[in-house]
Image 1: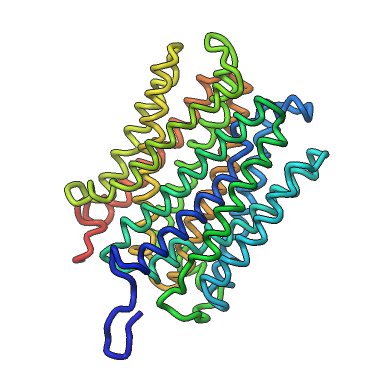
Image 2: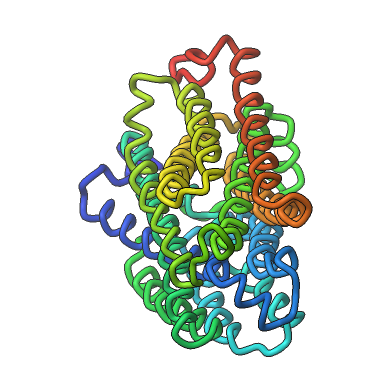
Length: 407
């Protein structure tokens, strides 16, 4: 990361190279998450069209996230061999092709297979992006740079969900997903053209098994992986099944009307940008635990039968989730030791495994006991995540000391 005279070659905040990298990765995050989550706003239509249950329909999202979870480690290792930018370009271009074809597959089984394949390809961005930012941007600007990338993923998820549902309401769900795929393709082209090379050449690093084991033996890394699994799983379960609830009494919303709840994602786009500023006053782990508390408060409000109260609760829940996710993403490199390049992919493995597994289990809870059961399930996952973070900090000198860079 240093030049011949020892100067750090990574881009400072505000420099042309810094802006170019952030624009490219913002677009990549937007394209990835728009494609990955576009079915979430149209799950009720998918269920009706294919003649399946609400829980089965969640695999339209879950298959893609399982693909990402499986793909992150191989993509990370490939990027060590051929370079971060080259690997991301291959992944994004391939995912664009699959994404454009997937909406027109007539069979649900083959549709799920295509979504899984799309997830495997999108894993190339999810696995590498944070590492690429760390190798492109100076450490002083890393927090805000990661926040900008996560804001792109947040807006992508928002646009993908709303656009698919609004178009589907005037046609069908296939045209809704196709519209999102075209938008994602345009964002992908911007990424392919604008992404600059990192300041670090490709290198081999530890073998994948040794690097993975090194991270598995690092408690700080595994605590963050657990955060990703529990918080993201609860988050996806909430959005998957709230759409079903809002289409029934006492709300009775249409598919397009229900899709506008995803505007709550704007709270996540904002919180992911400013949350690192909060850590100047409150330590990162303290901020993360506080975010989990806000998630629980927002979740409780969604039990109301008054729509504005549900919306306020969802905004609180969403903003707090993305703030917690940004903190955990920023800490993963700080806590990693040997096998550092595989620490972010392991975090993403937990993140997308939680999305798939807990997103599905939330559907079983919904089928068994309705929205109250889903809220109880998500609340338990969120509380467990907060407890694990607090317990780890307590075993490392307390919340104020655990991530102090001077230690």
